[in-house]
Length: 447
Ligand code: SF4
Image 1 (cartoon, rainbow, N blue to C red):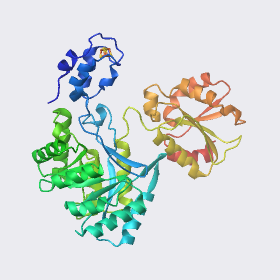
Image 2: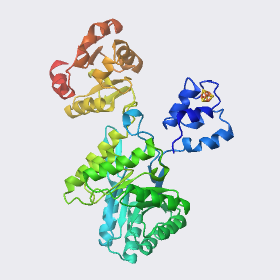
Image 3: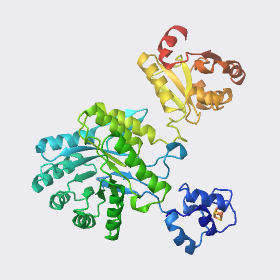
C-alpha cells in the first residue's frame, strides 16, 4: 500500500531547513508521497527512517533496461499519469517484429534497415530502438538462426518472442553480449521462463489477460528471484488497450500496487489487419502508456509520424525543444546580406531557417534566447521584448559581420519597432512578414 504524506512526515527531521528544495518538511513529505520527489534530496533522513521509507521512495514503476552493443531501451520509472503534471522520462521503445519463418537474408535485410533508419526532426535525430524476433515457425533451430541473423545485422536491443521455453532457450543462446527481453512468461510456463531469465540476467515479459492474473504471476516471479518484469496485459484493439494500460498505470501510480508496478509492452498489429489502424493504435499506445511497442513491419511512412509523436510526448513540457541562441549563417551570407531575428524554439527556428535556405537567398539568422518559446508566446511572456532583441543583436557581434545596420523582426512583434529603435540607435528596424512561409518573397522584394 502507498504510504501517506503524513506518515512520511513523521519520519522526516522536521527542521524545515529547505535544503531539499521545498519550504517545509511537510511539503517535501507530500511530494514524496505523490512520487514527485526523491528521498535522497533530504540529506538528514536517518538510516532507520530511510529503510522505513524505502517503499515510499522506490519508483512506483520499476525501471527495466534491455541493451545490445551500446544501444539500450529503458522503460518505466515514470511518476505521473499526465505529462503536464511533470514530465514523462523514458520514451516508449519502438521495435520492429521479424518472423523467424522468413529467409535468413530477409531477416538480415530488415534488421539492417531498422538499424540504419534515421530521420532529422527539428535538429533531433529520430530512430527506431530495436527488433523483436518472433518464433512463428515453432522450430528452435530456425528461431536461433533468426536471432543470430538479427543480432549480427542490427546491433540493436532484442525482444525474443516465444512461449515455448525450449525455443526461447535456443534463441537466448544467440544473444551473447546483449540483454534481450524474454517474451513471455504465462501461467503455464512461468517457472521455466524464470529459470531462463535468471540464467541470462534478462528481463521477462509477464503475459495474462486480466490484471489480477498479471499480479499473481509477478508475485510468483519476484518470489522466484526475477525482478525485472514487463507486463503484457494481452490488450487488443483501441478500447481494450486504452482501458487496461491506463488501469495498470493508475494502479501503480495512484494506488501503489507493487504487483503491477512495471512497464508494459503492446503489440498493435494483433487484431488489426489494416496497417493504418495498426499505426493509429501504436500512436495511442505510445501516448497511453506502453513502455515498449512492437510494430509488425518496417515501413518509414508509418514509422516517421510515430517517432515525431513520441518525441513530442516525451519532451519535458517545461523545457521546450530549443536551439542554441546565436548567429546562424544561411546560404553563405556576406557583409551585405540581410539580418533576421527569431526565437530559439526549435520549430520556429527551423521554420524560418528552412524558408530562407530554400529561397537560395544568403542571410544571417540571429536566434534570441526566448526560453524555447515561439515568437508570439515569448512576446506575450516578456521573453522576446525589445531589450532581449537588442541584447541579441549586440552580444552576437553581428555588427562585425555586416556593413549595413538593418535588422528584420517578425511581423508578429511589429509593435516593438519604436522601443527597438531606442534600444538600438543607428540600426534600422524592419518589420518582416508574420509567417515564415512569406519570407522568401519579402527578402526578394522588400530588403
Ligand atoms: S531537507 Fe530534510 S529536514 Fe530539510 S526541509 Fe527538507 S525534508 Fe526537512
